[in-house]
Length: 161
Ligand SMILES: [Zn+2]
Image 1 (cartoon, rainbow, N blue to C red):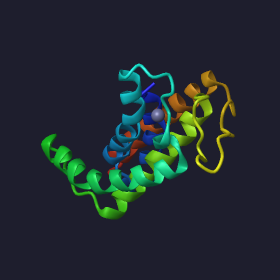
Image 2 (cartoon, rainbow, N blue to C red):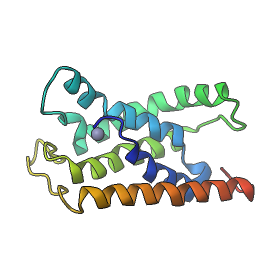
Image 3 (cartoon, rainbow, N blue to C red):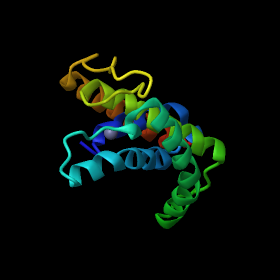
């Protein structure tokens, strides 16, 4: 399902782990960008939702777009909400965008049978069923909880956030 919040769990964990070297806003933006294709397919009534956007090649291209759009849009958004340090470097934008698109392929690949991550080289999905969908959701939820606590601890102890 497009824009599933499960992807944000790993994002929170990455933010906790990487601190100022990671932008949650750019990561979130990359999730929206990569799920535009399934959204459009869903609106068209198609049953094949996950095409070129949900491949390694797609993640590479969409990661670049998310890097280029993520820095200016992310900074503008952070300024708008009054965030203290709204600057996002190109390095942080790229790290966050690519962790976003590739983690998305990993999570979606486990649960969507219509995905072919290595297309056009292979139409097989080696990630499918790696763990059950229920366990995948638990892992993502757990990552979100641990990440949330980690981020809160960074703010409380005033390390880089
Ligand atoms: Zn997706």
